[in-house]
Amino acid sequence: MNYLLSLLFFIAPLFSTDKNGFELPIGLTEEEKGKMHLIKEMSRSTDPPPTPIRNIAEYERMEGVLIRYPFGISTSIIKEMAEDLTVYCLVSSGSQNSANNSMNNAGVNMDNVEYIIGGTDSYWTRDYGPWWVVDGNRDISVVDFTYNRPRPNDNQAPSKVSDYLNTPYFSNEFVTAGGNYMTDGYGISASSSLVYEENSMSDAMIHTTLNEYYGVHTYHVVDDPNNTYIDHIDCWGKYLSPHKVLIREVPTWHAQYDEIEEVADYFANTMTTYGEPWEVFRVYTGSNQPYTNSIILNEKVMVPIMNNSYDDDALAAYAEAMPGYEIIGFTGSWESTDALHCRAKGIPDLEMLQIFHNPINDQSEAQNSYQVDAIIDDLSEAGLIFDELKVFWKNSTMSDYENVLLEVCPWEMVDCYWGSIPGQSDDTEIQYYIQAVDNSGRLETLPLAGYYSFTAIGGTAFEDGDLNLDGVINILDVISLVNIVLSGEQNSMADLNSDGIANILDIIILVNIILG
Image (tube, rainbow, N blue to C red; front, side):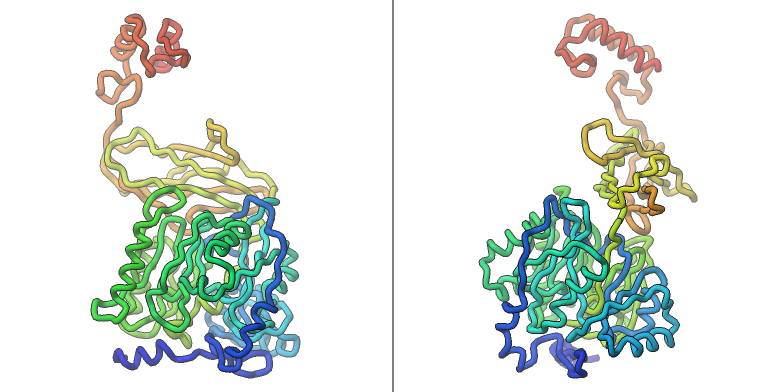
């Protein structure tokens, strides 16, 4: 496809059929441009959810996925989704039989299909579908916004989903679309500056609203680098985890090259919740392919592909960024501004087994062990099975994983567990993942698929007590410590009573530690 033709596709209006059979574009019709006052009339506001609030990320455990009939995705995609998830299909009562026949004839597992009855105006469930939080009551709740299109039926979809799933429901007057929003699940979110343009509230009030209703403490609002009519962030970027972000890449001659590189640099210089730089991955979109418009559904990453020579490289880019995940490409009626992510939205496991962990970084010197700590919280409240809280690890010479049992953290932190991966004799790469099991029958891992990895330096590190620096604590170290204590020096290493004075009692404790 030549560049001029690709530009024509890039700006072409995209259409969906509403409940009356009329085609609506992903953008605004001329008629809708004269009905923008309806957006304010569609808004509704409740008190915020009880705190603390955590906005759930796309890459967390999903129980289902929300689509709409008439479909915006192929039945082959729906079939793939229904292998592992419940497909929740928004459909008008008069169209349910047609939807059922269409999926059944395509071989979709109909045991995993449920219908939410109610008319819709379009199939962009990402843009108008519900946003989810874990609220202060430890309930997974819908926190609604106002859809930025004057489409009342679409705007009502989140409340319909909430009613169907019997979840708490909250709402605010923030005007936006889900395609222009991504969150890390830890209180960091991002959108294009379209959110400032389409809201009558001040920029500061937008940030306050995101904090009060979604628990977002850091909200990145950046100019859209694509310079298209839609300005949605999922057309060029995507959080892949609380540590990784994917940004599209274009050739140097591309009209938006400078802007796209600028936004990639911006995210590279922002910090994760753990105060570390984001790891930025790139996917090449030289002809404006919609590769960032993918959807993550648990262990699967479903990527829109275009049947061109760049598809394999795009899938490989995801595989590099998300090792161990199943990366699947799907063709469809995709455009640069509208693809798979726009037309489906995950529904989280309402009693998910949450695991939070900051992955171990590459090492620059030898360590005697590598501490793994995690927050593990069972929203089912069924109780954790402590013998199944484990870290699985292996180095580059091992074919199978070994495991270490996690224990309650010795420091005071709720739901905190820790364990240690042993030090390594040689330089190696260590791969590991965390497992938790609760009494509801849920077995969860972090990451959901694959593993974390870091480079380890071989050898033994110096520890308190190893005064000979030979990697072995022995009787010579006992003698050295005795001399330190009897000399009357104040030494933090020998002062185990933490009274500022090293004494004979400390000698006894240290001897027991060294010899035991």
